[in-house]
Image (cartoon, rainbow, N blue to C red; front, side, top):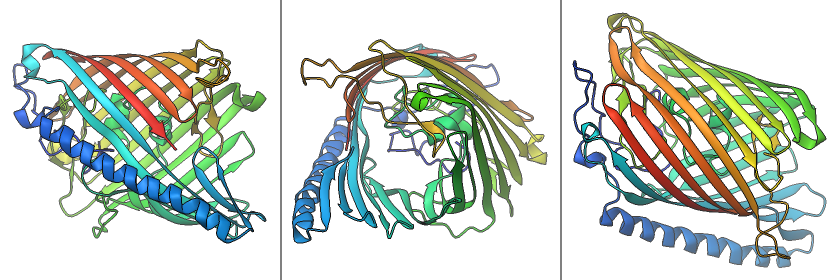
Length: 440
C-alpha cells in the first residue's frame, strides 16, 4: 500500500520490512517475525474479543432502556440495532463485526518457513446516526490490533446535491476498496488494490449521486496514523472517483458499472513512498515490495468495470502508479484483477448506488427458518501486480483465488478460500483460508 501501511487489523508481519529481490531473482527466507499463528497471538486475540463482546452487550442492553425512556423513539433491528425518532429527525445505529480467520499454508522452501495460524482479522464496534436529518456522524473502532484504532470517524452535512464530510474515512478510490470487508466475495482484497489504493486518511470531501445512474466523490486528505492523527501538511492526497451505470434494472438484478478513480499524491521535503502487497492471505508475509524510496509525488489511476446479471456477477480493475522520483528513474508500476461469481441458490450480488460499491447479501431463505438453507456463492479471481520499474526491483506476483461462501442469514457467513500465490523467480505458496463472520 502507498505511504505508511494502514491495514485493517494487525498482522505479525506489519512492522517487518519485506525482503527485497536478490540479484539472482530468488528471495531470501521470510523473517521469523513475519510468521503468524503463535499461541500468544491467539490468547491476546481471545482477550480482545471478550472485551469487544462485553462492550457490544452493554450497548445492546442500554438501547431498550433508552427507547422506553421516551415514547417518541422506537428501537428495532435493521442489520444492526437502531434507535429512531417517530418523525425521522433523529436516528442512532450501533453494531459491529467479528471476523475469525484460520490460515493453512504450504509453500516452496525458497519463500521461507511459513506457518499455519489463527487471528481475529477484524473486531469492530461502531455507532452512527443523523441529527435533524441533515447532520451525520459515525465513530468506528477496531480492537483486533490490540488498540482501539480509528476506522471511520467523521461528521458530515447532508443536502439534496451531496454530502460534505470531515474526518477519517476512505478516500474515493477503487470499487474493491470502497466495498466493505463485510461484503467482499473473498477474504482479502486483490494484489493491486492492496498495493496502490490509499484507503483511509484524515481530510475533507464531498460526495453525491444522481438517481441510480451516477455517483461521484472528491476529497483532499492528509496521511494519517491509525488514530487519525496528522501534522504533516506536505503529504497531501487529492482524490476523486466517478461511477456510472449505463444499465440498472430491477433493483440491481441487472446492472453494468463503469468507474474511474484518480489520486494525486504530493510528497515534499524528501518524502518517501513504498508500494507492497501480501498474498491474498492476511497472515502471509509480503513477498513483493518496492521498499522505501525518495520521491516527490505520484499519480494513481484506476479503471473499474463490473456487472450483475441475475445470479452471475463479475468485476475487474486496472490500477497504475506513476511516480515522480528522479533518483529512482521515475518508475511506473501497475496491476489488475478479474473476478466473477455465481449464486447457486439464485440470489444476485447486491449493489449500493449511493456509494457505487457492492452491498450486503440477503439470502432468499434464512438458514434454520422454515427449512431454509441460506445462500451459496462460488467465485474465482485472478490478480497480478508488477512492482518493478525504473531503478526499483520490487518483484512481480500473480494470485489465483477460488472461493465458496455460505450466507446463513444477512448477518452471518462462512467463507472458504484457496489461494495460489506465484512469486516471480521465487516459487509458489498455497493457502487455505477459513472465516466465520458475524456483523450486526
